[in-house]
Length: 258
Ligand SMILES: [Fe+2]
Ligand SMILES: [Fe+2]
View 1 (tube, rainbow, N blue to C red):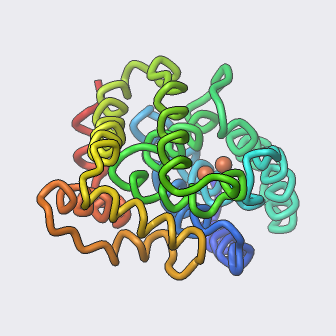
View 2: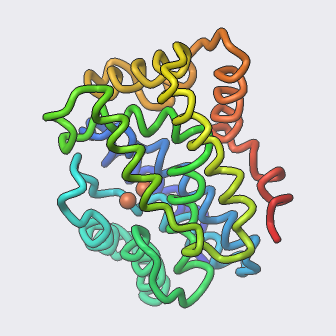
């Protein structure tokens, strides 16, 4: 079992190493929410408390090395750096191995060996890359990530959303989570419909986050808090994103499990 003191130390190191990061969508907030999500997934998959704590640690470290491009394998780099951190803290060797396995495989599905192994992938994909929150996060990402530097706002938004929608494969998630995935995904497709239809509130939201991503004038979380929607759709989306950020969605998510 990871002692609470060690978890706190990991948290402190993750927070410190994220200071001055050049990708604010992967800031400490992202690590902390992914950690809480990974712990929740292990719990609902029936993993013991000890595994839940290891999943929390894995979530805190999964993007500890995160360059501002998709062209480098940050999962392998994060696993390597996490190994140094955990060994430095004297964490049990077998625990280190299991944490690193979850970090190394957080980007795409593999043959899962345990709830812990799968937990960071599930939290990152279902909670951070879907849902109302990602509507803000994705626009911020498009503004921030250097891979889009040669495209303008509208073009980059449309191309990226289309690519993501085409690539989406609900069958990579366990059947138990399909309803949750559908629920989370609907926020994304719904928003893209409003954006494609040039609805002012949707364009305004995306533009604000995109600009903040470019300039870092606001953090990712700051964008959600700063957006003041006038339309009911925008308000519904913002309230949902805030509830997720504040960790208030888990009881409802639990009801979607099959
Ligand atoms: Fe990642
Ligand atoms: Fe991540």
